[in-house]
Length: 116
Length: 114
Image (cartoon, rainbow over all chains, first blue to last red; front, side, top):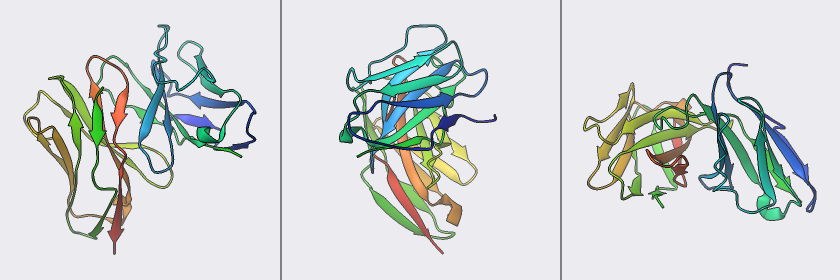
């Protein structure tokens, strides 16, 4: 596809369940980012992948959060034992080269997660 | 850590008029990048304009321009000839040349009145 895609668009889950969110970056983009956006707030950095380098996990809020990316393709963000405070929109972005800070990040439409 | 502050939670403007959205940031670095992103109800974040801190000249993109005041650590966005399609949340963002995370402000919701 032409842009970053994310699935599912919306996810409703019960407290304590695990969820997996998926991101398909733009083909050829080596850098991939996950952000969390709570209602009425700005974006909060979660994790960053750059090619085959070790990911920057400095933004993950707890060990219930993890993410994987195989090479320069799809990434999945997993939240284990979800809690109501995890309710938010999770946005994925990709760019050509993460270290070239000027490069534009292209965002997906996000996944709205609701934990009941 | 760098912080980005948008002091206007909501702004409104009449169609065809001009509006300025404020953004200030805190950093000890001398070289960095600043961005304005637009987020319409579709949730898709769209880059509006960007500025490199070492450039004195303010960036412009058609109806969008910035007023970058490096000493004051201010980066405001001016939208000229506002259109109904400009209605959205606008986020100011900072990115260091050293670290990778982009820091976002809390956003300003812009309403355009016909």
